[in-house]
Image (cartoon, rainbow over all chains, first blue to last red; front, side, top):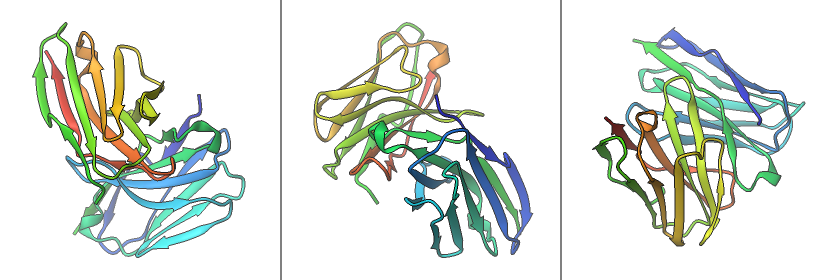
Length: 112
Length: 111
């Protein structure tokens, strides 16, 4: 089956710093999604990308759909303590009846 | 927030007993999913449904069955629970099969 490699596995940063994380796949996807999970809760959708090369922002978050359709990037600018959590990427093929393949997550810790 | 609830939220059961987890939605979304989340493995799809009585297997379906008799309810059953099924289980819903909205999770411990 398809697998996603998400990196880095964890990050420890100072408040105010920018953050970058990415996901790569050996196969192409039609859709890339980024989710955030707070401790003890379910993941929440942050950004959805539907076209190769697409760049989409949601507040301090910016995500890009790689031009090869095999990767995606998420950047967080000027991090704040509430950015702490696990960030997941997910890829989908239109032919897969809604099945998403998830990366293993990037755990972000922000030091005040 | 999407109207999605899971019950129970916590359960402790013994090896060999049957367990049923319930996912209930008030959004009338077509697609529903069950995932398990374990440390180091992210979210892994167990089963999903693309309509009433229409279900299919995910990547880790062994030992699990599902049923969807109404649009709003998707049940996950462990016929005979094993310790390897100790996990956090998430239900998700989706209208158009792309963006998924997750429930709060059920923490299951099999002793």
